[in-house]
Length: 340
Image 1 (cartoon, rainbow, N blue to C red):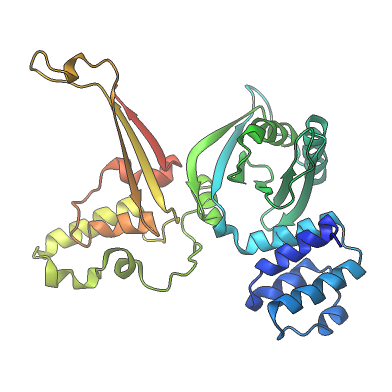
Image 2 (cartoon, rainbow, N blue to C red):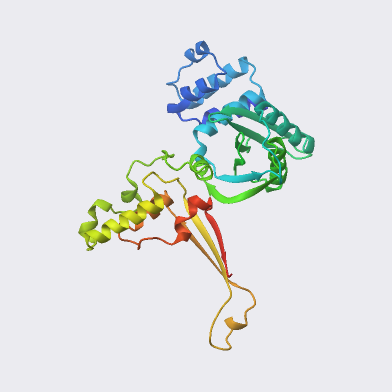
């Protein structure tokens, strides 16, 4: 017998939940009662556990929206499994900041999407810091919404920023941007050159909130040991430099990066376009009309902390290039460098 979409979404979501997090996520969902949860044997095989939980959900007549809320909660717990893009909105010239009503935002956002696309389901879950998580299952004019590949949006009320999980359906981005802009009472929206798996770090960069603890999934080793194979406390054994120079490097590094943990990004990408220049006449490259193109990508489990460690470890001179140190201030980790 074919399972109803809501039951199938619940089943697939529960299958993804690690056993160590199962009770926490189910209690956060708050769809099954305490008494119902006590009837379940959480020590049995995962397949049997899932079957028991799905039967309880069906007894409670779980709707598609209930299933979507469970999926949102799972995604909140595992947000680092997604790649997040940042969108920035702006008001028109002379426009004042309006009073914000979250319920009005939700209603307007949903109406705009459904007016443009019949086959779409939208679910919301309020979160901390006046944020709302939005789950969108996109369909087409002729196909029902795909509940198994939804997109997620995190919007912080009364701010110009929204964070979206990268979606395979790029064609829906203009509609999503329109819904965000109108519902939040902004004038226009642009995609920033900023992307990461670490949502809290992206938020800290755009909101200029660097001095906090960031997501550190699966990272218990100090960064200097993990990223570089070096400990800056051992500099004296591998680098012969005087005390004054060491103090200068530490001072310059602290002035640039501060003495707080850095936001977590995994890469920075630089695209260079330049015309060939030479004092010598002739040559194949001299006649080339198209610019020379080059792409450089820096990757690390924790790029900004790795960059911060380079000069103290003696691997690079201090200060580092502004192209590397400007990432948090500019809110970018995609750069295009062209001739002036």
